[in-house]
Each structure stands twice: as C-alpha cells, then as structure tokens.
Image (cartoon, rainbow, N blue to C red; front, side, top):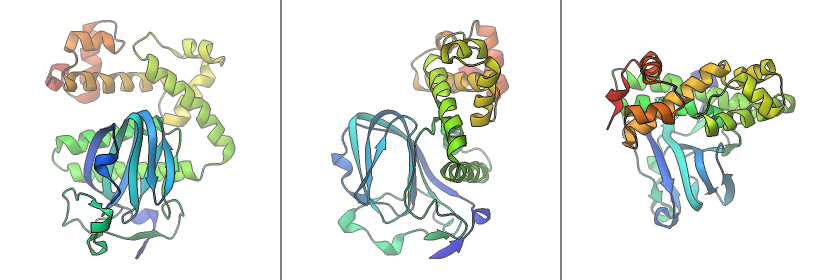
Length: 283
C-alpha cells in the first residue's frame, strides 16, 4: 500500500455520470477497482458499503475505496452525481472506465491503486458527509469538463478534483461551531436551489430566515466563496444548461424558467459565464 500525503494528490478521473437508480437489484453486490464518490442530488435511499448503510438524501456525499463490497438501496428513485477516480496518476496508463465486478468475481490484483494517507484519516474508511449541496456546482463543473473533453481536460479535471478533495477533508475536520454556521448556510442554499426561478435577493432571504441581509451574505460567502447574487446567477446558469441539454425547453422558455427577466439579460449572463450562446447547448 502506497503512503501518500494530500500534497501528493493528483487525481485521475475515469468516469463521470448522473445516475438515477430506481431498483438496486440489477447492480447486485459489487466491488470497484478504483475509488467511488457520489453526491445525492434528489430522491433518497442508502448505499451499503461493507455492511454499513449510509443514508443518501439531497446533499449527502459518500466516498469509498476499491475492493469494498457495496450495493444500492433506493427508496423510490435516487439520483446520484458520481465519479470513478484514483487519488494519483499511478495507473494513468489505464484511463478508461473500469466496470465494477460482482463480488464473487472480483480480482484484487486488478485494483488500480491502494493509497494510504499519512496526514489525514479521512479516507481510511468510507467518508460520509451530509449537507454537501454547496459542492454540487463544483462537481458539475468537473463533470462538464470531463464530458466535453476539450484540450487538457484531464489536467483541469485533476486540478478541480484535487481542490474538491481538500474541501472534503476540511469539512470532515471542521470544528462543530463552524459546522453549525455551514448548516445555516446549507438551509439558505437549499432554499435558493428550490426557488431560483423567483426574484431572490439577500433582503428577501433575510426576511424568509429572519437574519440581517449582511449576515445572509456572510454565510453564503463562507459556504461557497461567492456573494449571494453570484451564487444565484451561477446556479441559474447551471439549471439553464440542464434545460437546454436535456431538450426540456428552448432558449426563451429556459430564460424564464431560470428566473431571468428578459432574454437579452439571460443571453448576456449566459455568454459571460460559459463563453457560448445558450443556443449552442440545445440538443
């Protein structure tokens, strides 16, 4: 088993997907040859890893290593944003997705890496964190980079994922008092993500949650690194991309579904964030 530190992390992303599971039976009990990480986007259920059930609801994040038996137990439909990855480039010669094996057929000799961290205990057992919806935007950015596969996409995916892992370690090691503030921020962020199509502002959020608008802004910045209006704009653009790419709406419909007041403002904001016109994302 290779001893590494967080400074030595150079992740290798093999696969990124949005996965909706309604029945875990077809997946059975499996073991992966590389690491897995999932963020629950909607729905609920459990992922059972090494006979421990981890509840998955929106914002729940679970990371586990290779060779551990796991299975999915959705409660209805459970939508997960997931990645297959290595912590290092040790197996960079094997960049393609490696499907998991049903538990009895698993061959341990095919595991891509066995990384043991000397400076954190976070990854020694499955890492489970609740209230991680603020990281959804970062994960979607990595997924988009991996999906479009522009030049040097692997380098950028690795850099973005390395940053994500640092945030997970920070969250896992966070003092309780700071975690309580993040919990308040998560409530506000969840409200924004549910009501992004409305005319939101720090003043309105302050009225809803009973806080001063300035305090709302500090909580959002602490959790996301952005002012409230910037976070809201980014989230609206992400939802707009989803609508356009899925074929659920045309450009005009997407504009108003995502809370923009007029098409000109939507197009200008969209191009500023993505470098492209909304029509470029139409399926």
